[in-house]
Amino acid sequence: MKPLEVINPSTVQEASQLAQSNGTPTNLIAGGTDLLDEIKEGVVRPDKLVNLVSLTEMQGINVKPSGLDIGAGTTLAELASHSDIIRDYAALAQAAESVATPQIRNVGTLGGNLCQRPRCWYYRSISFLCRKKGGTTCFAALGENKYHAILGGSDCVIVHPSDLAVALISLDASITLSSAASTRTMPVEKFFAGPDVNIMAENVLTPGEIVTSVSIPALPANSKSIYLKAKERQGMDFATSSVAVALTLAGDVVSSARVTIGGVAPIPWRATAAESVLVGKAVGNVDLKEVGEAAVHRAKALEHNGYKIRLTSGLASRAVETLLSQWR
Amino acid sequence: MVGVRSHVTLNVNQAPLDIEIDHRWTLLHVLRDELGLTGAKRGCDRGECGACTVLLDGKPICSCQMLAMQVGDRQVTTIESLGDSSNLNPIQQAFLDKDGGQCGFCTPGFLLSTKALLDSNANPSEWDIRNGLAGNLCRCNAYGRIIESVKEAARLIAEG
Ligand SMILES: Cc1cc2nc3c(=O)[nH]c(=O)nc-3n(C[C@@H](O)[C@@H](O)[C@H](O)COP(=O)(O)OP(=O)(O)OC[C@H]3O[C@@H](n4cnc5c(N)ncnc54)[C@H](O)[C@@H]3O)c2cc1C
Ligand code: SF4
Image 1: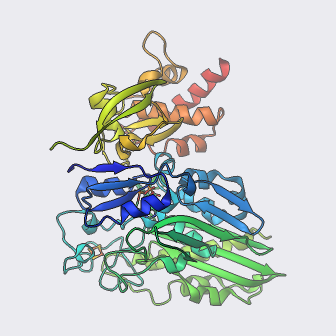
Image 2: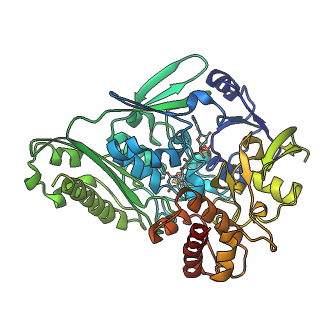
Image 3: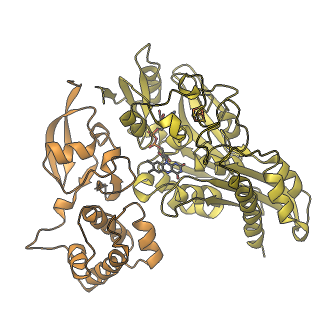
């Protein structure tokens, strides 16, 4: 590892100014559970790290009647064990609990989870200068692509690795980004951007911008949510596929549905076709197979990841089935 | 290559230590190579195996995956503080009694994850134990005896 300097700012404003870097390779570091991997491998080579861990402005979970405000510095363990989140925003607690190991959840943060970089093994290895790192080839497109995208990939077929993002989009959450000059808030869904927008990044953050918080509106009456994740190893693994569903019932009719799938596309993928299948149906008339098929609408396999289409379809059916059974 | 250095105070095993550190150093490097606390092991160096587990404010973390500069005033607990051969901690005693260690490389990490688990949940179910220890790998595959050791430790602690 080449020498680097860790700077401890005392405000978000100061952190943002420092992160603007002016030509010095600079990265923000929160828990470091993702970034240190990249630095050790040499894929990221910063001279400076701006430490976000001690920023009290970015800490804490604030429960209000209108919803939840969560500081970006909140750890995954705090999210997974928070009683209000477990009760009212189950998909988020389940997604946080599904990440990695107790050790990583005790350190990894909400902001870091949403901004973590892809796990594509070509991206993570210094031996491959692929398109995401400024090269001209996507080695995964014709190479080892067992864990790559079935939806939305074009020049780069990564899957977005974040579990929390999938749950937050189904919960209709918004995200706040702050820089020294301004602050903006947008739906979490709009925060992520695929390779067609900027192949070198997975989101719309501009230099010096920091994710400071995420807000979730209180769910309407008679709503429930769920997050299901398929992984190869139960103990610790990224999703081969995941599904977050939030449903609201009016009487016994589905009045609103949000379905998001993860581990399948360069961004967390809103499965609007599955939502359309659900909305307006009486609970007894929901065709689970139809929901599952709609969830993978337009999915296209690469050479080694065809299993993901059936897996995701089945997982979506099961998520809706399990959620509906909670009303019985 | 000489790197940027700073003087910091680290709280390790209840004692404040003034030390000069290179900003690149992980907490694991400082513990093992600067402070001689070699109980935490360098296994995968990627946050996957848990051999480097220490407690930070009582919670298990991978010390390989945290820069020492980020520790701040939080309390670091290493395996060296648990007990020695003349005065074993009940968790150590239980792992001995139930043969929960084989080659021993992963054992310090397992003991600390067990401590954190039992500190927050005195009577864990088998599932709680599996979940609590999910971040520690044992290449000798002694998992069955490790789980028995954790149950025994809970029993010994309850007996007082
Ligand atoms: C063994 C292992 C298993 C894992 N398994 C999973 C898994 O199953 N699911 C999953 O979702 N993740 C998994 N992860 C990834 C894990 O690193 C993240 O889940 C964690 O939340 C990252 O948070 P952090 O605070 O440590 O991020 P850091 O490593 O500090 O930062 C990650 C990236 O985000 C940027 N960043 C951090 N905070 C901010 C902010 N507030 N604003 C702007 N940019 C920011 C950093 O610059 C960096 O590029 C795993 C990691 C490991 C090592
Ligand atoms: S999928 Fe993206 S990150 Fe992976 S090799 Fe292709 S361009 Fe690189």
